[in-house]
Structures are given as C-alpha cells and as structure tokens.
Length: 173
Image 1 (cartoon, rainbow, N blue to C red):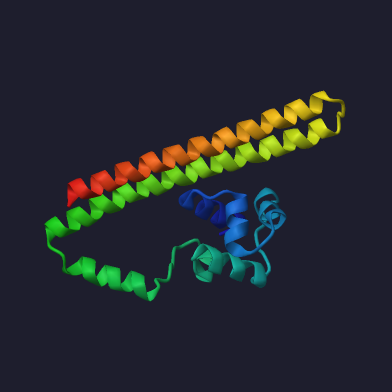
Image 2 (tube, one colour; image 1 turned 45 degrees about the vertical axis):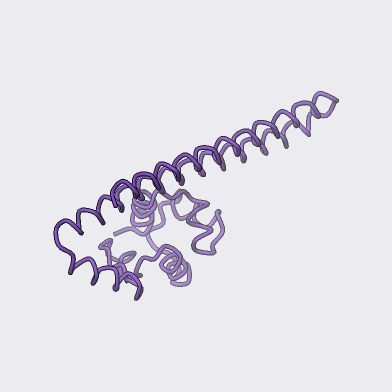
C-alpha cells in the first residue's frame, strides 16, 4: 500500500492533523505535508521509524496497511484484568471508556479549533502589520481579544466536559 495512504488513514483514525503528527513524531510540518500532498509512495526508513514511534504504529503497518499495534506493559495488564471481568464489569468499563473517548475526542476537536483560530489570528496580525498606520494597532488588539476569548471559551467548555464526565462516572459507579 502507498505510504501516504496509510499515513492519511492513521491521521483520520486518530483524528490528527499535520501539526499533530509532526509534534508526535518529531518531524517538521513540511515533511508530513510533503508526504501527504505529494502522495509519496515510499519514505526514508528514518522518517518511517519516527512516525512509527510517534504514532504508536508498527513499521509493518506502514508497509502493508494492516494494524500491528504493539501494546505497552500497562495495556497488557488492563487487557488481562478486563478478560476476567463478568458481563456487568465489562459493561461498566465499556461505558466509562465510551464516555471518556467522547470527552477526549471533543477536547481534541476544540483544541484544534482554538489552535486554528489562533494561527489565523496570528496570520491576520502579520498581514495587518505590513499595512502600517494606526488602525493596525487597533486591529491587533481586537485579534488578541478574539484569541483570548477563544481560549476562555475552550477552558469553560473543558471544565463543563470534565464536570459532566465526573458526574457520569459517579453515576455509573
């Protein structure tokens, strides 16, 4: 399977964008963007190894497109414990896991939106600085306020989600 297709599938599955993958793997945004946009069929082993390690995906998965995720010792312990649970215990674990997955996915989406808004705000600030005049100063302050308001909104929503999750876990227990 072509490398870029496997990488794109992983990004979709993990709900990651190019900057997320770059940070996780220690590669530059431009390297990841180049793989995806140029539809790279192959990459250097060093790049594949960094992506493999950063994304928690085996090199074999990049080669054949079949998941071969390795588990760390803690994950093995969790699986062993899960396997000895009765149906009720498994239902409780699955309910909590589903709720936490929704919460974390929602938080990741909100963070991405805030990151994008902040990047757009910074881009707008840069463009406005090049236009000069006193109006630039006013617009910069407005952009800072928008970014600040977006951060505040994110923190409020994160607190609400955390409180709701805690309440749901308490109710489930």
